[in-house]
Length: 280
Image (cartoon, rainbow, N blue to C red; front, side):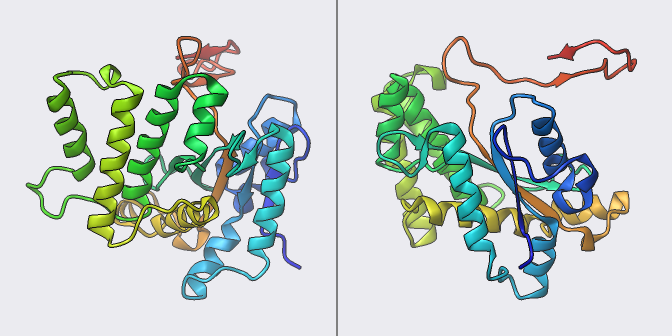
């Protein structure tokens, strides 16, 4: 049986930095960092060969892929102590692209995947922060609605439907900043976002977390041939046959209170190459 999925994390690491062609740059380096003991959130990489298979077989996946993804997801659950779709301690994941050549911003990403009407309540209880949980949920619905379900302005002059709902709610509440919205306000925003999806897509936002996952995986593979990616590859001479990998990884949060943040870190000064730790 072909191996389509490679796990990475503290408990298991299938790949390394030499496997860039198969795992993409991101997947290969996540595996390498895991193998040398850096605290990488666990996850798995669906190989670039799946992308090639996907386009060669009318956007169908290899038969063994589903079971391999489920097995890799169980490994992430075991390492994190969380369960995907669980009503008490849910695992949330990110779904990102990763070609062998860097293509920053050209392909699609989905964050906070695994949230639904049940797991958002569990996240609020687990973190003790209802506002954080509902903020994650509304961001996820917007990102999933745009990336996977195709909710966009119909014309160049039309306002973005999600941004329009956010602006309207802030006007109704007479607040200026997103941070001024309470958990109750964000819960109402979630309701409005789901209504936008139902109206635009003629189908509801998916509550099944596995349906969410496969929708996001397909969206990343499809983005390999979106207009941005095609133009970027043409400009930099990247062959379409290379394909992209998909990286599914346990979520960490930069917006969980004053002790959380996001940034970029280097083991060298990126300007001079000097061997000093650098970050921003």
